[in-house]
Image 1 (cartoon, rainbow, N blue to C red):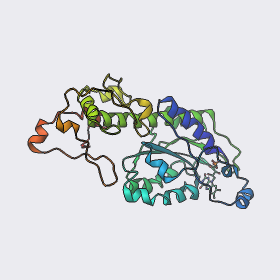
Image 2: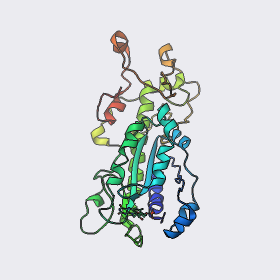
Image 3: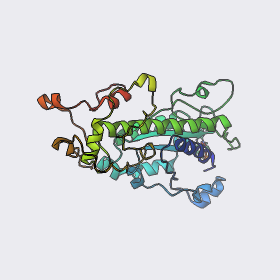
Image 4: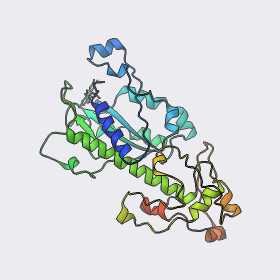
Amino acid sequence: MYGHVATLAESVIKGVEASGAIVKPYQIQETLSEEVLTKMHGGASLKPKYPLLTPDDLKEVDGVLFGCPTRYGRVAAQLSAFFDHTGGLWFTGGLVGKFVGMFTSAAGPHGGHESTALTSMPFFAHQGMVFVPLGYTHPYVSELNTVHGGAPWGASTVAASDGSRQPLPEELELAEFQGKSFATFVSTFVRGKHLATGEVAGTTPVAAAAAKEVPQQVDSQKDGYSVPPATATDTAGTAATTTTDKAPAPAGDTTGTTAADSAPPPTSAAGAPTTSPATGAAAAQQPKKRGFFARCCGGGNID
Ligand SMILES: Cc1cc2nc3c(=O)[nH]c(=O)nc-3n(C[C@H](O)[C@H](O)[C@H](O)COP(=O)(O)O)c2cc1C
């Protein structure tokens, strides 16, 4: 409404771009009338710089960072109204497994920097989304000498009750950091998933064959969230990984493909690829393709 979140968003966008991922900026539909906005000394939201977000837009992306000013310690009604428009996505599982992060703005240092994200958790949980916090991954989150935004939940700024305070350079740096680390995290997961399952657009036999040649040993302790160097058989480029992967498969490379490899992965009713635990003799015969996927996610049982 007053531009603070929009300013943070520009830094978040820069950070996502710096990661090599594709970013698609949107604005949330304003719900207040011009008359009310004028009385509130706002109104920039009536002239959107970016396209208005529709629920369908979320189908195309692997992750979304919602920026929203706090209202009484939770998201503004405008974003809440958008959440309420996503019933169709909920019904079809359209957001299941997509990553989500948040950044915010509050008038005071204790006005909602944490609770705005915290109170959005029911929406993310019900949609099956995976929240990616900022944590204390940047020293500015722990900096105590000045009044500023930035919480383990996400980047933020302190706007003052009259909105007179603008985002500090450090707050913007943190927002950029969040954009980059979020996108790197999402890209790492998506690439790992593709490499492990051969699940690229169209899931061709070629993609399955490529997946078999993935090196199995990735040191997650050493590499953290970093993306491993691409191999000759890695068809999923980083730039495409935070949106629907349209990476083409290399022509003619079908070596080593078996009938089982050629089969596309099972899909859920919503069309989302699913994985199921292999059992018995079939499991014993299956090549171990999931090393990177499991390790980058902490070695959990994610099959
Ligand atoms: C109805 C209303 C409720 C608000 N509630 C809070 C609040 O609970 N805590 C707080 O720190 N700021 C509160 N604010 C201040 C806004 O968070 C502040 O205007 C906003 O962060 C500025 O961001 P923007 O420029 O992107 O709109 C409230 C503002 C409005 C209009």
